Image (cartoon, rainbow, N blue to C red):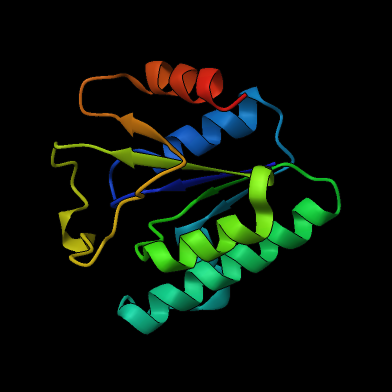
Amino acid sequence: MIYWLTGQPGAGKTVLAKMLFKNKLLDYHIDGDDLREITNNKNYGIEGRVQNVATAQKIAHYLNTKGNDVVVSLVSPYIDQREEFKKILGDELIEIYVHTSEERGREQYHVDGYQPPLNNFIDIDTTHDTAEQSYVKIISRGK
């Protein structure tokens, strides 16, 4: 299974991914910031973001085909890229839209062209819920 957490910077994707990784004993966690560091991709424009998502998708798909469960925490702003990946993976992918109306210190990384999911996703609003409450929502809906 691949749990794909998408949303704006500062929404809580990485925090929730770490909880899923730790508590569900998932095999791998792929984080967008870590991936950029490893691949030296410092391009935050459209091309750089598309490349970062494509790299995460390739790695997650490969690991999943080897029987591993993966959680990905990545802005992944473009719906067409996410929808194509959902078509490839089918029931092996759970898309989780993590968002908040609060400012959390990452506004300088806000993605103006972010496109939220339209269907077949878990909606997690971290504005008023704690990380633990959001985690429970993911687990209860992700089964």
